[in-house]
Length: 388
Image (tube, rainbow, N blue to C red; front, top):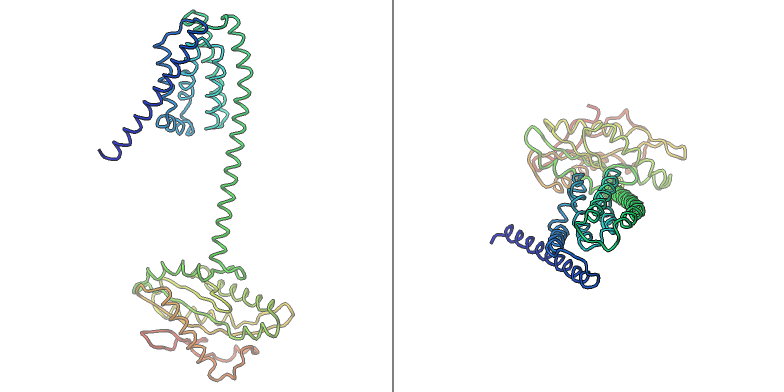
């Protein structure tokens, strides 16, 4: 027996157990009524109504019906669900209690789908089934414990009492659904905030190293000849001196301004991340050749060497060492980052070969900086000149 057949057999067995159990319960109630009150209660009708009610209440039948009801296709289901308990009460001589049974089914229906249409439909179905129970007793089709004229009055009073209770159930269910939706929306917002915080640098708003790796993985995987992927590793020269002389607040201003300038140069053509301290990484994709990456690095250096105004009124000019690593085949993101990092340090050594170690300096934009360093075929090749 395959699994779907076994599952179907179990569902049928569950329905049969529920149907037989409720039918047996109804027959037990019939025996009690016949013994105590001496009413004529048809056993077959009582057992049939109980079996049908039990079958509808069984989970394999009830759950799919509830899903249809929640989807707005359950008006006939609500009416049918009321008929069986009302029929059982009517056959047993308790037809005056039909509004109570009908209201219970209607209350369940509005809890599944608390809409105005469901509420009106449930109350209307309760009225119809209660009226049918009264009519059956008045016509003498079934016996009644209460005089039919009095039973009609009792039924009307019970309907007037129970319909507002169904409305209250609908209102409670509606507010519960609204609260659940609000809670789910808040949970999603919190998850989005946590994800953003995990992937972004709080100071600059740029991607963090984790966010960089997330974007770098598909970028490196898509690298191919004629559509290269490049990583530019940027390290500020003179940042520590700014922190030491002007304070950490000034250093934060410098880092934020650096992130803004990097983002401005790229204008959504690449990915910018702050990976720690004064280190930034830029990812470029779909490059025709390495010269395009060198050109972007030149523009980045030119922007970063512009003066920066600090909160204490001072103006500083810091430089940047840039290493470029380019790949035309898929490779490890960490390996490409390491190659760009090594290229950056090679550029830094060339850049400061004639410098006495001073990193914060006056504006020297009139002087030509040293060439870039780019990792190429396992060795270091000079890139284009920063002013070229």
